[in-house]
Image (cartoon, rainbow over all chains, first blue to last red; front, side, top):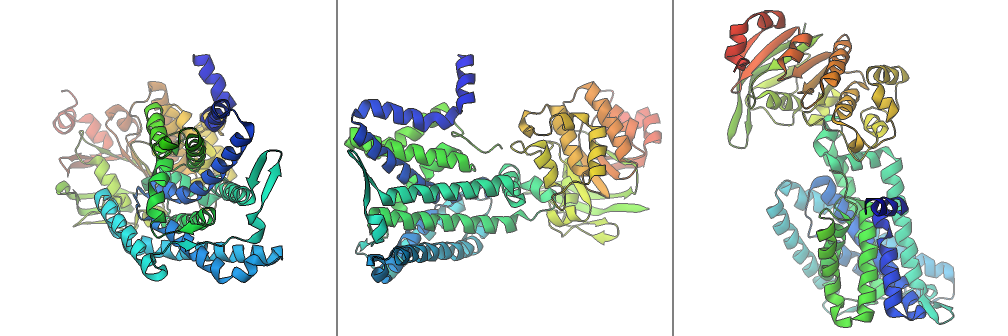
Length: 330
Length: 234
């Protein structure tokens, strides 16, 4: 048994879980084309959830802040991007790929800027007074989430908003019986690019070293001469910007959004962070992919269990690994 | 010459007053030992100097400058390093990364690094290993190395021998002797024999108050005082 554990650890350990889940699903689904479609959809969904969840994981890991308002940024990103895309509808429908890409680029950039500015405001005004007090953090950030939803309702109205997509992302790639939406490939690649950028920042730069050290022992980082509170503002802004980016991508995926989008995603985002292990970007990616894949497979095999599948997954993983799949070392 | 002065320092943790009117002068050079029973206030004294707990009222003066209102990071930048009781090494980081973090520029001074290799050869051997995989003694070596990777004026070290094997304790004592030739050490310790072998000056803290100050040689010779203040024979 010990040998088997060692062999599995050498092959990748918990990183192999999505592969194992996909293999089991392949057997249960039985139709390769359906399996490929569901797997691609699950990976794309996982990457979008990763965008939304990675900032929350870092913020919790680094500063021990329970930010239930994080999902307000998901909603905000979705609506800002949708508004820019609607405003640039002429570019979206154009035959020019350049105009298509520019419209998408501007929409995502607008979402990122709103996330950065909103993150700075949120940390400074709402989070800072309640450090080290989890109860007040939950109350005030839940309150902020409700206020943000109402503000979105006031600005964009209560009617679900249609999200136009660039022409070049509307089509699909056909491979035999398999049809893969280009938008899903784009979402997957964008999520992967963000993960690689985050990974390199955390593992190859001094600021990343500080963040990793701060997640483990904030006090000691300060005793080495670094103002971790200033670092935290940067991390909070980055986390909020990633959430707005995730929200913007999710808006394009859903194509119809309502102000409650963030609150609906909140549970999934928290499940991913808990499954992955608090404060760990690698864990968050693993958790997000697991949630994306399991949600799609179960939705196909047992549609009535789709909603419960994430919760069951979380319970199973926590019974096996109480600190999550790849927690940051504490 | 005086390096550090604690003036009528009182530190409260929540509603409890842990330190009462602590006044202490640490001279520059050598090892100054702060002794005391469990819960006497030794760790709180070090944490108050670092700004991790805020003394009020009272003050901490370092090289003549009042540092009691400074943020911990600013205290560290004044040239004070801290090795806490739990060592505070970053387990997810390698030995190299732990040390890089303690440098000002992110680059090592080769002479200092070689000095560390000389003091603690194990750190060179396990250079690329994550700190969580090190033994207790090796973690303590890393914690001390982190404190001396840059020039410092004062190193605060909290119970470095706790849980270590005798051979490691001997190595640690040799290292502290060498470090104290260039840097002042304020050492909190319960292992009296270890403290006695290193200390030049000393103080005893009891129930949050300084109960005795003087030379280590005199204190080591006075068994009755040791029994009274440290209950060594109990």
